[in-house]
Amino acid sequence: MSANARPNDSASSSIAERIAMTHAAPYYPSRRSLARFAWLSIVAALLTIGLKGGAYALTGSVGLLSDALESVVNLVAAVVALIALTVAHQGPDEEHAYGHEKAEYFSSGIEGGLILLAAASIAYASVGRLISTFASLINLGAAWRLRQAAKQYRSITLEADAKHLLTDVWTSAGVIIGVAGVALTGWLWLDAVIALAVAVNIVWAGLQLVRRSALGLLDTALPAAERATIGTVLDRYAQEQPVEFHALRTRESGTRRFVEVHVLVPGEWSVRRGHALLERFERDLRAVLGPVTILTHLEPLNDPASFADTDLDRVEVG
Image (cartoon, rainbow, N blue to C red):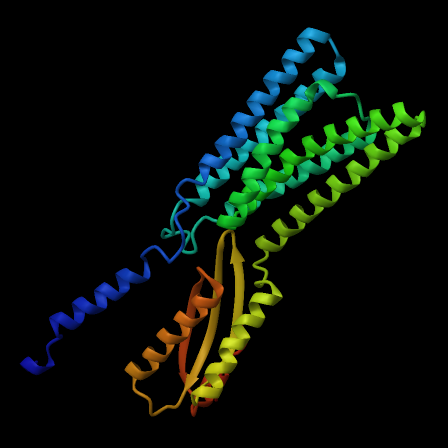
């Protein structure tokens, strides 16, 4: 082999560096401290159990004991959320190339089921919990903070935990309103109607979480508004450049969002020119979508084989 035929060491090094970069952490905001929000939920649940348990010890009320035991379920759910967030934080590895974020769907699914059970118990019997009002305020504050964090980090686990805490708040609020309404009007049926209304509201929240968890496990596409945004960027490039796009696919996995698309360019373009176009295209997509993992595939426009892979199963071109 001649000297000119030997591999270029610098080029090999560059390729190795590029391969290493594909396994580097993607552009996402730091989520290392998400577990602290689960700890917030755990602390709130422990304080609530202590307050309600103390009220039961002072009054001997079976209703308060039942309320305290119900808060134990909140504690279990918070521990599940902590475990899910800890697992989801682990980065991609050999066996899980897309990361572990889907662990959040298991947590949100469990919490959605617990919400439905809580709603059933509320519909079955609503008991007086006026003494637990202060404990509910603690849950309200924790739920408000968890909802803020859920929106900031796009975490369905934190959102589910916040809604779970709110079930306790809505229950106590419904009881207070029901008792006050009966005292003012004398209508005994008003308490049951308000309790059922609270139960229906909680059922709806639980069903929404269970539905979103199921859709997430099925690799559901991004919301229609975000897909429309992607389409706008594709159209702009197709008008400004002699390029086409097909095989656009999107999905969500926990807090991660994925976009895959094939980009067809003139066959006479150099690899460098095509790569530069893809870099600009991906940068523009991130500018409008925020943190997102984008996978692009470059193909020549004048090759029939480029149009054989628009579906998941490639069509063989004879």
